[in-house]
Amino acid sequence: MHNSSFSRRGFLASSAAASAFAAADMTGLDVLRRRTHAAEMKKRRKSVILLWLAGGASQLETFDPKPGRSTGGPYRSIPTSVPGVHFSELMPKMAARLAKNTAIIRSLNTKIADHGGGATLMSLGRRDEPSVRYPDLGAVIARELGQADTLVPDYVSFYAQTEGRGSAVGQSGFLGARYLPMFLTDKSKPDNLQRLPELTEVDHRRRADLRELMSKRFAAGRDSAAVGSHNQAYARVHGLMSSEKLFDVEQESQKMRDRYGPTQFGQQALVARRLVEAGVPFVKVGRGWWDSHGENFETHLELVTELDHVMSTLLDDLSERGLLENTLVVTLSEFGRTPRINASLGRDHFAAAWSCSLSGCGIHGGAVYGKTDDDGQTVKDGEVSAAGLFATIYEALGIDVTKEYHVGPRPIPIVDGFAGPVGDILA
Image (cartoon, rainbow, N blue to C red; front, side, top):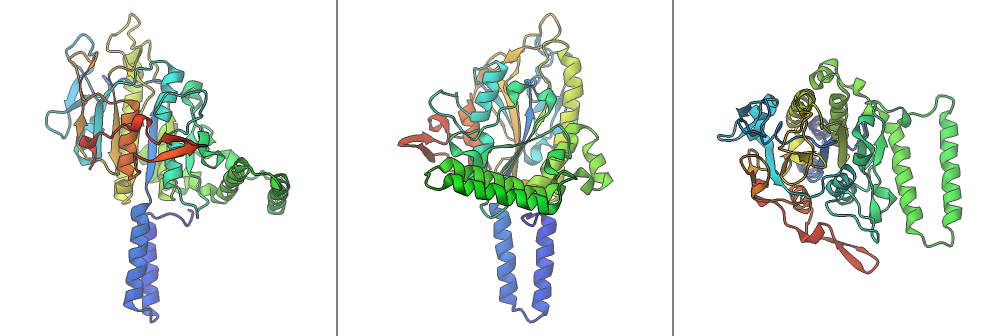
């Protein structure tokens, strides 16, 4: 694993090393300074894992069930560890551990219910416009939380073929190529990080030198921020190739791999944990396809059961490693599903009253914000927009929600309309 990891294991190793130095006549004050510095670095390093439920997961079969109503469907609701709060019976593991570190927002009203527009809105936190290309959530977090002195990537996105092209939104916008997402294939161990076997290390190094020479010649006499940004992005990818084991789940014990489960979603969630442990600020793991216009209940029986297992395992693993206090885990879709059940026993696209969850860093465990009406048709209390959700995420991470970027002379707020965070769910 890359040396930039500040996992509990790495911290303990550093402490052990410091003790060894102390035995070799290092003063106690020096040891204390080393330990304090390591602890402060760990405290400052924060990350996000986004579990992207592509296609639109149903809030009624997850975090906001409506049992006994015509819109409720066949599944029961079950009590969580928070008195008075219920989840769908398809989420028993998350229900049992809700109070520990997870908050639910039940009152998203984002108004855009088509895949392309919804995915763009929930990736950018605002509507797109022709005159400005905005950075998405991952790019902003990479910009704000990324470390300049590390070669691990700032932003990794696992793209699954089942995710749907409308949901595979990833852009760095006016922040530049330095913060572009690194898209990986639907494999847990991507081949595209490995050098081709016919290329020797010498060949690989010479190609890099040639590229650098050509880049410098091109940049000579030109004032181009884009060239510098692309060079930085290339350096990150080139450096990452020496850290390909970060993406290899076979580096984990069989017991740990079994714990996450054999599915692609589970194995990629395990890789996501490895990445944030190494210092990657933002990792997106996509799981599709939730677009259940027909047979909604069979679809969600399979997908929610998997989500419940993978999500609860990830949160437990992060917690046990001392990583959850600095890692924010978000589950999010481009929209929810209609309360109305259609003639094909499906639920259609719905953006007027739906749910998401936030766990870990900066979050008040057990909080539930917002309320929908008895049938789940409208937000009854505490409406939250896409911008409000983004402000909440930034606030939880310690990012200034009043910050502005500038594109030429134009100021652009980091949060659309300077929307405020949902304070009730923040620790």
